[in-house]
Image (cartoon, rainbow over all chains, first blue to last red):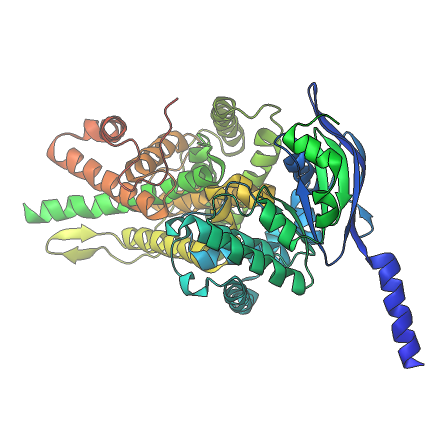
Length: 270
Length: 292
């Protein structure tokens, strides 16, 4: 009986919980430029999905829509069964959407550990009045925040650098720090904007391993990436955008053999 | 001669501590919002006049009157942000700065209606006789002023270094974009900056009240001095503001003592001009200085 119930639960989860993020015919224009046109795809929980396409295909725009920086002109974005249209950026972080940037954006004059501590801000009781009145509680919470930060830093493998000033780190480590800070908000989905840009081959391989490790923790990943070998290696599924439209979707193998994708990338006539 | 110099030093440090507290207010707001609040001096005045009413008028105990005045003025600061700053449709720096100048005139006018044009005076916080140090007189109120200024500076330092909210504010100051997308509600951080900044202004007004005449128009000059101090030390830096304040106070006091008391206010502006020519980032260069 117990077992049956358990199996039922699992079935239920497959039906409801499987789709974490649903992009439904989303369009966005900037002036006369149609950055996205009726793009739809689902992001299944627990998978790594790659978003690829030539420059100007609308990948970063899509990220900016999901993270609440822009509003779509048309269409819906459903995250965790909620329509997230028009929500504030920090509300979305609170719901479990975290991101990193194409050009690393860290708090340069703060230490590595402080960067990750700040990332936990949305997970703490830190309302305006709370900040002024809650002094006695603060200390205990601070300790938790510190321990958490160290745990996350050791997860991404830079715990030795905790006390270093973050602007002094080499670029590759700054990128890891940015991922660590994003993980600190305890996200359900992590959006990575070209995480391998500017990394050398070894660093890229390590990044791939780290992303797999993040996936094993149950965090869903959506990444924009130009490094095809990395994308093909770690992604479970890939969506191809071209000039604001969805061109194809499938497993890495399917994408590699897709004629229209090759046309978009290599400029061959179809 | 030594005792005279020592006397100048004492009065310089006293004034300097007050300039420092005012400068901290300027700096805090600048580092979070890049706004120079030219109404800041009026919050100093409001702090002093609130103390006149609560301590001198209603006869509340001093610590209570102190805290109520600071909170009252800080709340006024929040209202100021909500009504005058937040509502601006196109928040250009120049527009905002002019709004703060307007707010300053407005606050002075309202205070004149409430408290009148007369100047008030308050007794020192404690009525000990002045201490005698090698022939120089040290007023107990001076000790209070330096002590309270130091406590404020240390509390703020701890707030920024030890609490997550403080770090979140610092993060917002470093990179608004990254902080925003890390999930830090920047609007709340700006409100908090206004709260602390105007609260610090009130503290300055309260501690200076017993050694000066308190009136509705006392804020302008104090505000400008605080601004000079902040520029001198490095706008945006806590310890820079303190350094700038003390330095300005001491320079002023020696200038008055050695040359002439009519030079008192000129010294501050001379220092401001010099610093803008020689080292526009201040002694502690906190932020890259942008030229308009």
